[in-house]
Image 1 (cartoon, rainbow, N blue to C red):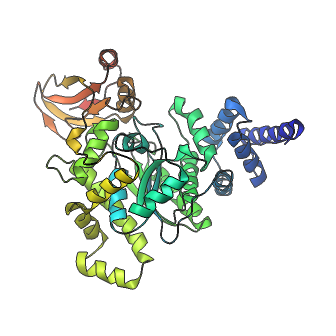
Image 2 (image 1 turned 90 degrees about the horizontal axis):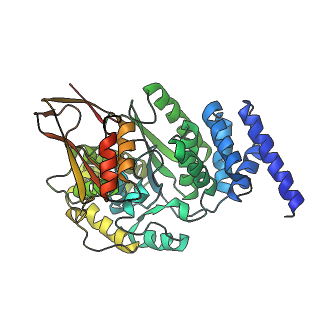
Image 3 (image 1 turned 120 degrees about the vertical axis):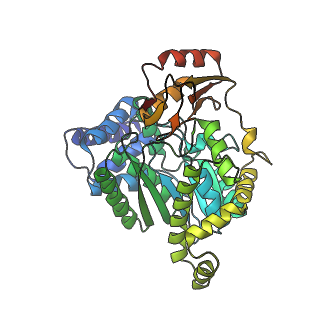
Length: 430
């Protein structure tokens, strides 16, 4: 392509961005041109940011969402697997709640393929890819992914390593400093990655509440309808689960703390977080139901006879250690460490316990401040940084009890964060 052609394409992309900024609808040609310019790094950060902002302020029609998803996929590579390909994704925005590390091995242990592409942190202190990286490499080639999935049925990798929906990763980087993603961008980002990864049976977790991205049940239902619309357009079987969320599932916030809790569930340790286990089992059961519906009748009858339903199936796989054994296989296949135990994972060596000045009960946890404080401590770059919630909503405490604990890998980060706590209150008490 010569310089005059490049200039012409860039001008078309600029005109498309201008159209969106004033609220006009985009054609597929408009959208594809913008995505192609972004992927080939000809648009620049400023114009890319304008495009991201236009979607945040004006939103997209369902047709435009289809165009965006299609263009994101078509301007990158794709993975192809035969048969049922399962996937699970949360729209994010909840600190902690690391269900994916539990769901993937349960589904893989059940015999279904689940090649999982995960993101790094955007609006939370850590992402699934940041957490899995503690246990095994997540930046795998396409060939390595095929190899891992062939061996184990599953994988947990970072999607930004290779050329799958590459425009999405560039848009994520321009949004990250502002800690925002529009609902439409979340929708397109998730669906483009699912399609590029060859997923055809997908469960989407949509948490809503004051501490997460989606604040109302009304908005959650709108998002659910859009997911279902896109899934139908791309011939994907989908189930969208809406959850009221006022606090993290689990107590650990930050890469090592979250990974440790997921391992405690998989290893069925006495100190496992029950709320994280229940949420993970619910997501697993829903995904197993979707996959089982398209499985041979013989398997459907066998599961009903042995376990009663898919929740019972998922529970058995977890309680008998089959899921943890599968997770060990995935870790090893991805080049990770053998014989990993949850208690081998230690948070940062510099810590500070925040104690109650009087007796009371936890009334509220502020998700935004939780994220900001964890980032001040060094998460997600410093894996040992984070916050452990010794008390959660509804739990009582006495004067002098520890309500939460800060962890950092440097004295500087810990001391600077301690100074900021009065301005970034994590908990409200009654």
